[in-house]
Length: 255
Length: 294
Image 1: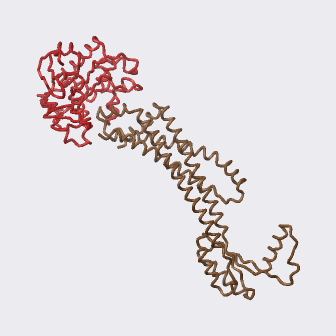
Image 2 (image 1 turned 120 degrees about the horizontal axis):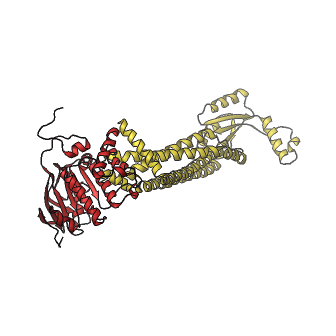
Image 3 (image 1 turned 90 degrees about the vertical axis):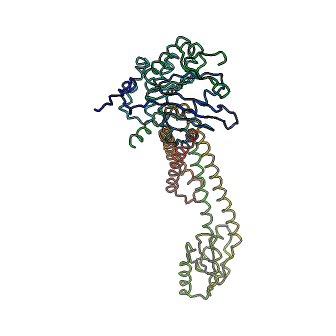
């Protein structure tokens, strides 16, 4: 066993039992001059520049229709930029072969406001699903699922169906599913939008803990209280442009 | 590779049973459509068999000179039999012709007029059955060219009329079968599309967590194949159960129809199986494809 002395395994690597090549510190997300024009002529993003270094926690704020969702869809290459470059973990998405897209998506965990859990699968099956459909060996699935369920605190609810869970527990299941691939980046699109304030705080605490484990987090939100309290980096979008990008910022009324 | 196939089959099986209602609806639609298709296919076969039965009735009658010797007649029979267009040749001698004529008169309840004659007025004839009514001119010409043939009964106009009618009916049958096939195709593909649509969210999640296209596509294709196979087997079961009484009824109804059910049954089973499996697979392929193209 020749462990690289300079880079001990991160907590998450120990957690998921998988050892990656030593991660060099670099930017996880780079957007350069990105414009997105939809076929119907609507321009959702205009000349956006954004750099997110590894380990960052970024709030993405702005009114509905400002381009937050479009930005996230560009990152998971659900859409392609009309102009400019979108680079995720060193891969320029506009030059990516179709067959390489799944590989990039496994580096990104996505969490939605409406959870997007499969109603007929238990918590464990929902999380395992992400590994099974990406061809993970069956023997590795069980242990990896157990570890992420422990991390999000759902070990006791592993065999329940989503409709037997509270909203917060459903969202934690979604986070577990997003984590199970050991991603570099978690994209959360208004993850607390359907949750009451106390549960929202619990969820934010969980995301902060995951961020401390070295996972970069990009979270779109309207929750002024959370943004202001945490004093993290805030990127504000309006009408498809970045109008503010500050570290340790608050939620502005205009956002 | 084996792990992938195993995964796909397992997922297909799970998908089928976890959405049992949808799978059942798709399978039953498949069964109904396959029954419709098989019904029209059998009907088309019966039609074609009936038409060729009618066409086989076309017979060329060549009357032979009374002066012809037995050798000459035998030679002509041999020559005609050798023609590829000819199905069979029967020789009716003068005496047989007279006997037939008397029988026909008696059957119609008329008195025997032939007793007033001192000689047999009828000619011996060659009755030639054709493989296809279209060969009539060639056979007529061959018979007419023989020295010992007195004349050939001209039935050209009648044969042409029969051929026109049978051709129209045959084409109409094929067109109707084609239309039914198209309807079946659309309904089955649409049913499978609905079944896949019901699981759009599952596909979306698979895409989001980074499943490759193959991992998304193949379970659905296997599942579509399963629906098709199951539908086809149920249909064949129903047809097999119905075949005996149906053919008995048909034999009673058209007692002259020389319809052999063996090959038709085998063709129908092949058609049902191929269509069911094919539509299941192609339907899923097309339905999932709309979610993969981005």
